[in-house]
Length: 195
Image 1: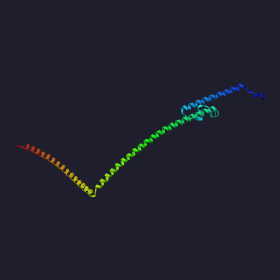
Image 2 (image 1 turned 90 degrees about the vertical axis):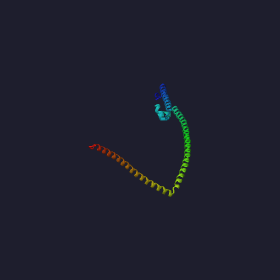
Image 3 (image 1 turned 180 degrees about the vertical axis):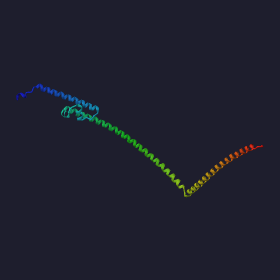
Image 4 (image 1 turned 180 degrees about the horizontal axis):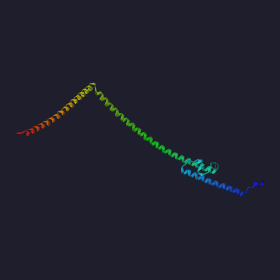
């Protein structure tokens, strides 16, 4: 039993140095992964860092340096996100304030236009009422009678116009016939023997 208790010291030192070297390499990969995630503005999580650094999640939870680096990166990203959100909120508030002022001005202009249009409508309605008041039953009867008379006059003139057109056509035919008869008589006279 005494022999198995003695472990050579150089072998332990070599194993410890290898573990230390492996841990330092893993920590460098963790720092590199955190830097890449920050540059890419990707949310920092244990899973994302473990995947990028090719380490286990257990390593990130158990190793105090890795845990501290992860916590610092999350804090820095949170502060950056808070500043970004605050800037965004300020810009959005300014935009909404400007929109609200523009909407308020537009509403005032619309209300002024509505008042002007209401006044104009009132004037026009008054004119319509005045015109309706002037039309009494006698005036309506008189206008209806005049309209009927004018329609009869138009029909009579249309008939007279057609008759006149027929007379013009008959007169033209009569002139043509008179010329034709005169021409025939002249030929007949020329063709008689003895003349």
